[in-house]
Amino acid sequence: AESAARGLIVHHMATMLYDCISKKTPGHEFALSELRRVFKDPNYYPTSAKQITGKVLYACYMASKHSSNETRRRAQNLANEIGATYFEINIDDACKALVQSIKPVVKNDPQFMKHGGDIFQDIALQNLQARTRMVLSYFLAQLIPVEYNLKSFLLVLGSANLDESLRGYMTKYDASSADINPIGGFSKIDLRAFLRWCTEEKGIK
Image (cartoon, rainbow, N blue to C red; front, side, top):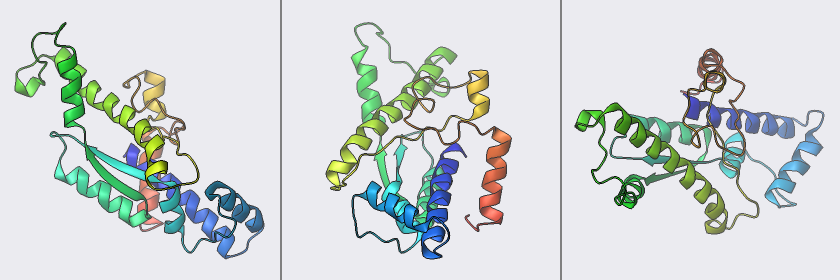
């Protein structure tokens, strides 16, 4: 829900920009000049909200062997529907390398509870996956502009909601660590309401 909300907020911003420019409402000239400044293209003119979204939102599904086909399908479908530029990578090798690197200290491989480990090992492995995703997010944010010849840099978006921040129930250096957190002021209840609004009012499934 949190990841979906991030993408939908960006797409809603793009929709507002496109409507302002295409309908020439007050402020449309400023909105267009700001898009041209961000994209470093003095002749840019948007053709749709999805086009704007695709130029500002780069979404990456970071799968592990524990990820389900259903979550992958949902991520890809949402990215396609809103026009985000979408990638998929696998984090298993990175996590395995980190586990191997602590062998001089921790002789036995930590295991998830369902594989015989205890609660401490389970939480440590869950957090390892989460923090690996954040490290890779920053790595990609620096390299995607080079790979795709973008003329500007990318920011990493966080997905820690307000309830998690107030309670401290979050993984440090994971979703709570980012350049911008679009949902940092949203409670779980507000997030659900926003997602329902996107479905019922905007037709995004």
